[in-house]
Length: 524
Ligand SMILES: NC(=O)c1ccc[n+]([C@@H]2O[C@H](COP(=O)([O-])OP(=O)(O)OC[C@H]3O[C@@H](n4cnc5c(N)ncnc54)[C@H](O)[C@@H]3O)[C@@H](O)[C@H]2O)c1
Image (cartoon, rainbow, N blue to C red; front, side, top):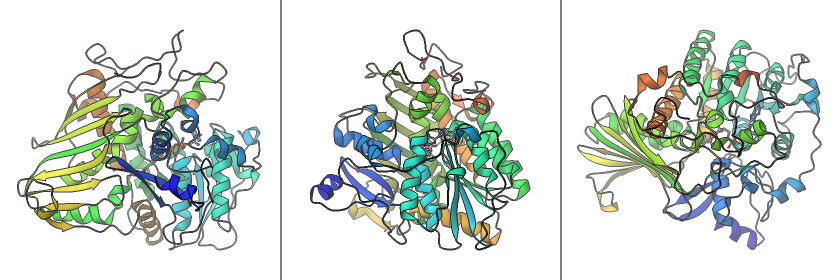
């Protein structure tokens, strides 16, 4: 593997955001995050700290190690790397509740200030994309997180790479559930806040950003259930009224090649789209497999740390990982499905205590009767695939294969996806993680309408619809999902570090898990 080889040969690795993609069954690493200048963030050797996209990084590191223990999952970094990091970080929880004076960066009046809320793997990636945009000067001025060690490593890596653009002294680093307010209070109207916590907190943080008149970049999924989707759709309207620019991290929509494929499909090159297929099957990914909580760990914080494992925090592995493939298929179809039926189960969970199934399969139906078939699996040793396909009456297409980018999108004249049948092939140049930022900044500079919050909420809802179909064993319609009353975390805006979690375990340390056919109205 690239990482092993590079390090074994004494090479350097530059993981500003280190994305790793499963190429068929072979893993390769691709470094993204600063494609413009290729500036180096850290020089790593095997076992060193890598701040990356934990969704994929963990998966690959786990697979590389043949290990799905929580050593990597918990922090998205390796232990040795964490020990080597020596940034001083303020114990700023004491500042919670104290109003922080509005900070206005005085150097260039056209500098866009950035605050980062959720200083983890993707937060580091999104911030580096923000600081890599070339249209306007950008500066990171405040950070928030609930874990000091997460912020510490994120700050270290960003400030090492973007020395001139990271201006986050100790009194603008905020730890705690209120930290998001303090961080946003450091911005002025028109600046950008990055929301990269697990999605449970998205609507809470988005609401405050709108109150403050801030532009927003927020990661997917933006909602985890029906009630949070309704809140997010209402907030979208509020943001619209204020003319705020909002980007949502469904970056595949910003991929040039997929955009060309979409145009070709709309022009009729595939004829009528009849079937779409998507696969996200791999070994244990991220924190989707959660070991029993050690007795000395706070329950709430353990769940947040392992957010892929608990439906209230992250929507589970289904919502976090499958949303991209669902979204890109629905984009090509130019519609959201109206209903879903699904299947799944817990076959190999051993003593894992998370709420995920290890297999999911969903049949989504669109209003015209056409289908999207979705396969999701987290299972050691089984075949892996990470791809989306479209089949029309006049031909077929790869939407993406072997990961998110490059998409390798192409069109075939028939249904056989073989080289001799290719009639068009795209060539991805711009990394869509950077492209989505360039588009957001352009919209801000030109004051163009730009609000992806509605689409992001709808994609999150459609994803939850498939998940709920699997978890309940029933056909779930779009309307039922949207109007579903089961709010996973009604107390999410009031959490405190020492407080109770919205999900409580039984005396044996186990949580309620979905039981299709038995629990038909609620997922757990
Ligand atoms: N678009 C993509 O390809 C992509 C890739 C990876 C992750 N993501 C998304 O980004 C989000 C974060 O994922 P990640 O992989 O970076 O996880 P992560 O665990 O590495 O980072 C999340 C960070 O948020 C912090 N946090 C949790 N609750 C908080 C709160 N209430 N206030 C402030 N900070 C809080 C955590 O301590 C952690 O540092 C998820 O929604 C995930 O789906 C998107």
